[in-house]
Amino acid sequence: MQTRRQEIADELSALPEDQLRLLRRSQMSIYNSQLAEAAQRSGVIEPRDFAIFQDHGYRGLYGGLDAGDIHGRKGLRKSQQILDHMGSDELAANIFRASQTKQKLEREQVRGKERANRTHHEVGREVRDTIKRLGGTMPEDLPTPRESIQQLQRKEQKRLQQGLQGSLFDDGSSDEG
Image (cartoon, rainbow, N blue to C red):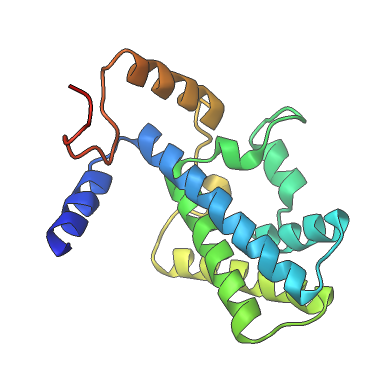
């Protein structure tokens, strides 16, 4: 089991940026769902309240910028989602923010949307401070990838259909003859 874990870790470390983006965007969807559930248990119920809650996390991580500001900086159209236009490092920072916020909401049994908002902002700011202490690039200063996640998914689907590349987790023991 440990050997397989190491093999998977090695495969992940060798992934090209586009595939890493696809993987992390998929992970972000999972973490956002878990965060939404934790926020709901804390009292963030209405869709508008959840949008405000999300903005608090972004403001902490992005030095005061909310989702609209980030959207604008990336030059996105109204219908485009900012998470679909992040590189793998930016997605990783957002995954960490979401994961840690969920854990803190649960661990401290945060109740009330104002406290949940404040918690999300604090966690976002802590992630930002950690990036700064490590000498990393602030999320708002990371480049916006040329291709969206949807464009990458279409390219990946074509590549898989043409048999140019196996699945990331394909161990070669396929049932196909």
